[in-house]
Amino acid sequence: MADQFVIYQPPGPVAKAFLESGAFIRSIMGPIGSGKSVACIIELLRRAHMQVKGPDGLRHTRFAVVRNTYPDLKNTTLKSWLDWMPASFGKLTMSSPITHRVTNGDIDMEVIFLALDRDEDVRKLMSLELTGLWINEARYIPKSILDGATGRVGRYPSVRDGGCTWAGVILDTNPPDTEHFIYRLAEGIDLDMVEQTRKLEDELRLKGIIGPNQPLMEFFKQPSGLSPEAENIPNLRPGYYSFASVGKTEDYVKVYVRGEYGFVIEGKPVYPNYRDSLHTAKEKIEPLPGIPIMVGADFGLTPAALFAQRTPSGRWLILSELVTDDCGVTRFAELLLAHKAANYPDNDIGGAWGDPAGRARGPDEEAVFTILNNITGWGFRSAPSNDIDLRLESVTLPLNRLIDGLPAVHVSPTCVVYRKGFISGYHYKLVQASNGASVHETPAKNKYSHIHDAGQYLFLGGGEYEIVLGKTARHKPRVQITAPGTGGDPFMPDGPEVQPTHTNEKTMREWRTARGQKPLAIAAGTGSDVY
Image 1: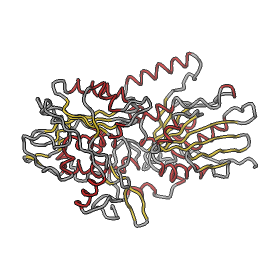
Image 2: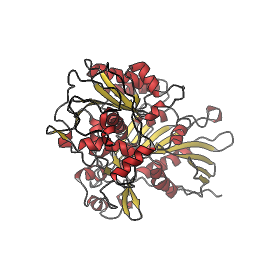
Image 3: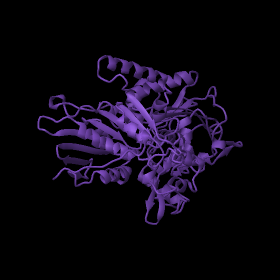
Image 4: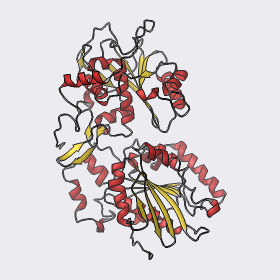
């Protein structure tokens, strides 16, 4: 095949500066339509051409492209890539992981597309030897992926074959909220990390590894789409950003049109009956003396835990959250102990429940629950069910209750991630169906889903399981603290322990029959048109 060429002009000075940067980690952030993703595509192609030739006369590179979900990866990221680098440039393999082997003249470039909602792709990412990596729409990506990526790049080609001419991680994104790691890194919020980065730069400059003015991290912010300096305007229809603003909320326009940090409600909220003014306290909720603390936990790469009390009247006081990133089970258990010691030194732990998958053995042949209990001594056990309908109902029902004129679920404002999840971070992602807009059957997996999974296990284990199944009255006698069958009474730790009753298929059939419905493909009450 004759050599083929790509002609590209940067859409503006910010994108141009992004491409010219020599930073090891760099990000470009801006409004929709500003040419961010294309700039990242061009950067991979440019670096492939800059790679020195190996002993065989070819320029060998290997890049990974990461997106949060497989549908987004396939329908958006891959399509953008193929617009600039068609499948005819080499060989495109659609089997997992999607791989494009680009061969053009002396270029031998391997591009591997990975989705974070596929376990096999995550495992692949953490074992690859790469030249560089592109994180597409980074606001949906946990920092653990960036942390892991920095150790995977700069390893191909090997030093024996000439080494990497360039290595690094590039990111593009619409503006995230102010809790996201991109905001914290770009705005220098974590002063310790700023100082650590400065020391590393000085050390590398002293050794001659990076240039005198070359930073390790650099963040580029494009202008508002409504400003005279807006980028990529010649490639957009006239009035593009004005049309994009029609019928949108101020928060949407702030993030997607003006390119400013913000929080946008996306998709269909999982708990539409949540009312922030009702369910969130005005001030921090302090633990009640003499009442044990209950804990719900979710495991995986980003384990999370929710700490709560259940009053004698049956009210849930959600006291605090523990949200981690790239944390192993042992470290998570240590953080749980530290959190309890710092916040509830005078309260006992009355019950701790987690994902039933925690009974499975990990790579070290020790079950997650075993590790947690050996370190904390809290008696972690499986939640009574992992059925998503039961889990959601266990939270929905108490959200609808008032007890003595007060909400049955009261969230401390210190639970920042849990609260944002309720508002809409924890949602059914909108998908396009043949009959109009619809939503996924299960909630989207994101940074809000882990703490809400933990909350569901807490509610089920702490008394809502039997209530959901209709085996216990919603308003229990004040002398009864937990529902029968969910475990020992945390207020009577010396009494006999009752083992949890786990849901079986027969129980679920009976429950769904009683509800008079089958599992829905869309959220109840929305019809086929969520708008």
